[in-house]
Image (tube, rainbow, N blue to C red; front, top):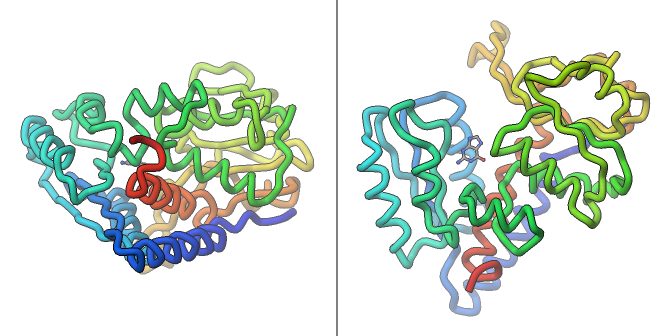
Length: 293
Ligand code: GUN
């Protein structure tokens, strides 16, 4: 079994990005600039956004954090998005999800100029991805594909089972895994809450991508010997031995599954850091106008 070291790969990519940025600056170009809108004080979202801001520093980007309380109205957020769309100093921006119930996430996503949508959530980017056109790929699926690529994992013709059908991970990663080139070219099955016999389907899989947010869901009896396991789960579970009072747990029962598979991503240190670095890659692409214009 080989551990897929997302932390190391993401550190390598951040160094590559930082070198490119210094080169751009030496040529008289401006630093890439990413803004993030964070609404409320959800612990997970606070942590993710703090990591994104730190990654910007490591890559030599300018970053701007815009915070709102939970009480912000949809109109206020839409107004801010309009300003960010028009702000020529800004290459891309994200609105951290989830948003409070009184705000339509879809309305917010669709208000973002797709050319600045470095999260790749806008329907134009999602549509372009699904037919293989240049676009901003959503960060977690892009990070997973990058890991499979950097570890030279052969996905052609593989049985790939995706657990979860979210717009952010399950659907786009299923689309990318079936695209007609490596990494991809897999036979993809998407399982979700209405799927019958998930265990049997998983047991046939050469690659399992678990993105359902249920800690420890994938158990050893669901894993074929030699399978590749990609764990997207990051649920906070209570842990009295930690100062924070919690630890992150993936969707895979790592302790019992690891010895059965050929490759596995740990939680933390697997997919998570790759998600952030994919956002940095998209921001660099936006700054260099390499996708649009
Ligand atoms: N919430 C969970 N993952 C993401 C992400 O990749 N981007 C944004 N904006 N919100 C998220």
